[in-house]
Image (cartoon, rainbow over all chains, first blue to last red; front, side, top):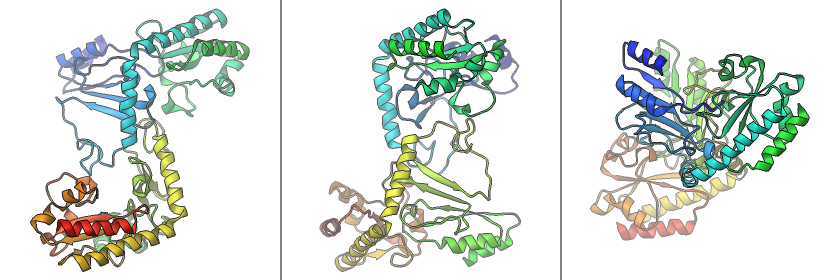
Length: 247
Length: 247
């Protein structure tokens, strides 16, 4: 926050601040209200990537002084390939795609109607049972963390995992061994889908830039475990059992 | 074609030629092979909006010397909101949306998987029975044209309707009367959906720029009738009956 304030204070012109509400790989949560207040003070425009949090936390973009926010349906069991861009009434932007007047002139082209309806319905369902789902998913995350500490020597967790963090993500750093280096594939063969980073960089040969930026974390093998309301304690137990066998 | 050749001949630098394969409002078809040959001669890059023709005509972009072509699934009974951009191997372009490496680095973002699958399946179905559907739909278009000429005095057709024209579209110019000016709404109330222009300009207060560009056509009331393989002769007869009553 102090670095951001310093940047804003020294800016020669009006700034655009773009900060994720939650990091997709390690789950760290940003205090968007505090950032929004700071942006208001320095007259900056504030965009937040809220892809990880729409449908998982109650959000009030107006309260947070957010000018732009983005969200994606597949993060809360909606259809893939449809998202939102929130634009505050207080700002104006030019569209990137010109032509017809669709989507309030912001994006020309025939609308993805099934996707849009699916987004709205999925958000409605997610909002209705948000607290119940939060409790259930956080329990799974903590269960996995506790079991891993007891089972895998040298295991660590990346990010602010037991603090201001997504309840849906646990990023685990395993000690580097021939077994852990193949962990993604070994788990996949057991029917357990996990990720080494973000989907946007899948197939990339380089490691995650997020993990690389954490001091001392280059040595481990990072794996991102994600939980949904459809996961169960039995699945967490099964996962830990498989990890023990593989490692 | 001679105007295009003149423009290309006088061009000071490499040109981008963008011409629709078929006009969406009046159905006029372009000879894309001839335009492609001309573009090749003058080393121009050729884009064609093939939205009206993908799934309705056999297309060979390589044969036509097309560098870029666009298509949309909802034009051949696929889902709304998903389209294709064809890019020839012979050209390179920069993406408009940067980020992840999705869609061969051309469009970052989680893919619309159900839409993409739906596009492919709809195109497969459309391609399988293309000739049968063509014959059926062209019969409906000609049936409507013939019946209108016999039934509505002063009716005219816009574009090259009985020549090089889409078999799916008939653009009719009705003499301007208090009744014909409300025709769109009157037909809608009878459960018959027609269009006054393109969907991209629906709700616009101005008339169609395509119709306005046809000499002498500003005086009539243009209505675009579109046919699909699901329409029947009985529906055409019903439509003509309703038009007679309304007008």
